[in-house]
Length: 69
Image 1 (cartoon, rainbow, N blue to C red):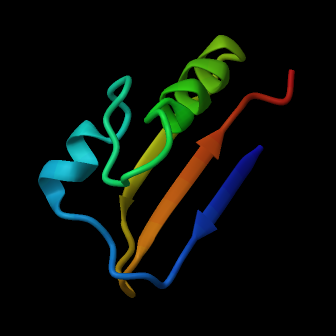
Image 2 (tube, rainbow, N blue to C red):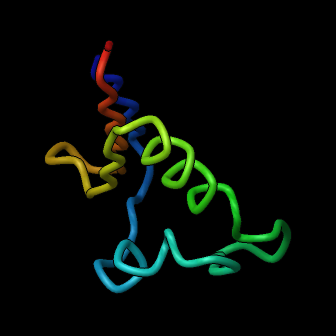
């Protein structure tokens, strides 16, 4: 199964996209910076893959791929 989530915001610099899955990395003044770290670990624990990149139309796109079996 594939789930894609896309927004139309300003996006992120490539240097931020590279680090956004690092534990405790955040671009915000609040929060823990653990959200996408946990998403990636949970998806991988189920044999899947999590990809985050800048969308061609602007903003960001997150893709979660997990096997159905």
